[in-house]
Image (cartoon, rainbow, N blue to C red; front, side, top):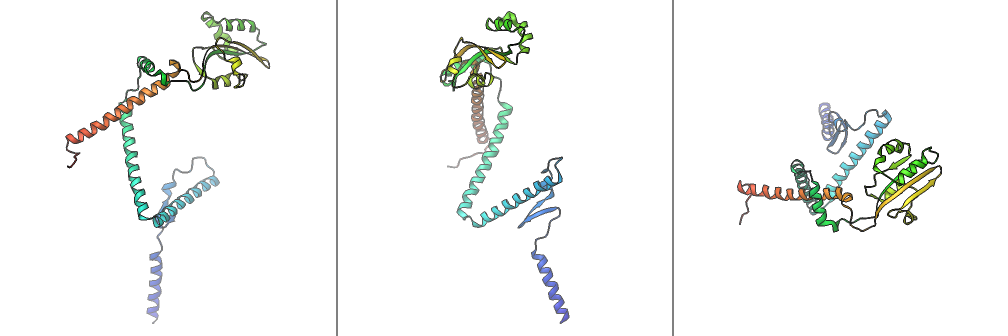
Length: 282
């Protein structure tokens, strides 16, 4: 009788241990039959993180991992077979799209010619200039912000408004004495840059200042802004070629990429047909 009782107790203990999930070596958490291991969080904590912050990061990661596991298990139990089948189809298609997109991008990156000549840009611009219109006002100007106490102020002022290329050396010296400056008035800029560089010009008073040929001398505290507006293009006008160049290059490169992708897709299909790797059964 004692022997039978001992055997029954031993069997119960073994049964309990059998049904209790075994803790995996180096595991730090478990949800059902899924385990999280030390290796899964090996790179989680940045170097130099304090012990307290490290513990918070790890605990937060474990909690989120557990929540995701519990949610996916609940979803698999409770979603209908039809709904799971629908999502599995989407997952398969997403994998196909992801892999093929990544592969094609690598092929394009290695193959497409990224050099676009000035002639190509101009030709495309002339043929499609109606598609390149300004989203806002564009301005060409030059300006300096100089202290009124500067001993050469009058000379600086005179040479600024009567600008001459022969004064290049003068500006190499005295432009550096200005708080800010931009002397290249061949570059088109949008109004947002004008508002930033010349804070006395605002959307409310811009029509007073932003006029082609306008000369501006504006004192702000102890500094003087000297400005010459060279040219202005209003919103929805054909954008100048130089201003459009970055967009033109991007458009032409995208055009090349699309042409290359179409060719690549046709070539890979034709090669498969030639090699009997692709057949359509009638």
